[in-house]
Length: 262
Image 1 (cartoon, one colour):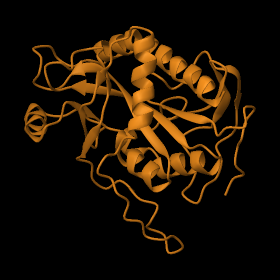
Image 2 (spheres, rainbow, N blue to C red; image 1 turned 90 degrees about the horizontal axis):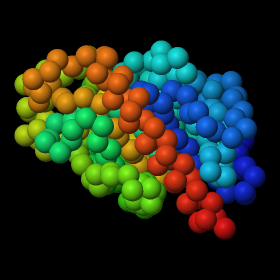
Image 3 (cartoon, rainbow, N blue to C red; image 1 turned 60 degrees about the horizontal axis):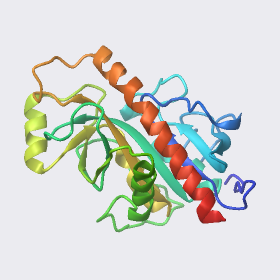
Image 4 (cartoon, helix red, strand yellow; image 1 turned 180 degrees about the horizontal axis):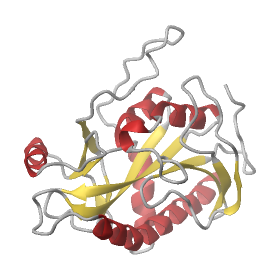
């Protein structure tokens, strides 16, 4: 295992996993990027970037790679989570770009989901598939850590940024977008959002004993929920507008971390 990383404030650093639109976190103070490290599960998507945000230590990892070269079903989620855990990280905030299913989930709405449904197939979703590991049957009733989710909501509230508290995130295999019939089925299942990346990331964090929460940005209405065609230009435009608020909220979370540590 890699040596644990305890940074300047003698507290384990919080990690941010950036998704689409956040492959690079501009604004980190004194960023230091390390080459991808080796784990028993291979290399993570990118080198870990160490730095400070609002005066608090943070580790940033680009989920899809620095150049967004890994499709959702090809991300090495196990290596990503293992690398963070082995360096001493105890809390992870995952950023995700999603489609909106229910009426309130319009373009550029921000959401802190509280539940998920996994529709993926074939992904390596556990650390417990090696002969040298203990089989874990983790309680996954509530996949997101409420305390960490609340810190995101509080940081947004302090900046008068509206964020939806709660929502069911349906995870599809990708990289293609869904059919209108698939979205209709997901809506009947209770899903508010559709995305491609929070599983197996969330359950691996649970297996590793990490607190895990997500901040999702709606970048398009899901298939069949709008008269418009879903285009990459539309998604990119909503990403650019929404990610500025995401960065502000994350800065607020880190500022609160400093106060908590003090």
